[in-house]
Length: 317
Image 1 (cartoon, rainbow, N blue to C red):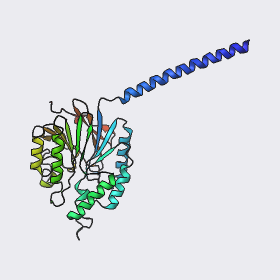
Image 2: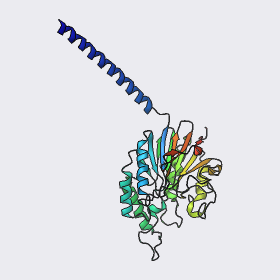
Image 3: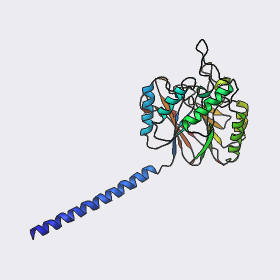
Image 4: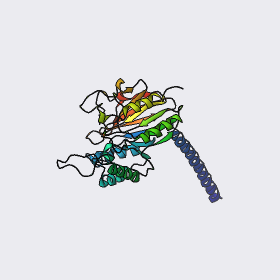
């Protein structure tokens, strides 16, 4: 009799324990569901990696930081993926490097990825490539990163993300968009006039930085052809942000986050530092339904730069 009572007592205790575990599991599942139900989409921008380049350990740690952020939806590599001339060795290293990023990565071309010949001058200077070598480099870019084209668009939440690349085969400018690509862009924008649009391109818009060095705002360091780009922007008021690299503007620069970043009273140009340096920063875009929040993270110090946080409001319909 005592054994039977003991059995039932232990049985009831076990049932109670299982019920408690079930309740806990349900609450845990619900908490995880709430945590994943974000009000925003997060995009992390990696500026000018120049791979392999300098500070390889720092670059690898930057990837580890991004992988540790569970709320990241997309990573964008903003051009100059390759360090120097876009050689096969550089592309091979870049493919291996980005394979370690656990989130989807969107790639765009920079001048170092396509415009130079592999062979340099007798003085060791880079030489602009022929139309044939540029075309071959663009094909290698697409092949390496699995892209059907070097320009494309994606819908993320309520936003249209447009990814453009310098692809002109003959221009002397470092960041020239071809007429074919500009025609595609106009069609893409005309079909999405009511959709808040963010454009990603290697070079910034003209006049969105102070002239802090001899290169900024010069022909080779702005998005080209700048007059046609201006006309397209002015005709498409849904464009409200332009995301760029190329100038290697550090987060410590006075015009990194400044009123001068606003182009034609319409588009906010977000400048992204290169990561081929000692101190590494990335920008994150938090796309809410009614606003985009921009935050800057110092990977070297492991800290957010609260003084650089910005809120950009898309144009209202």
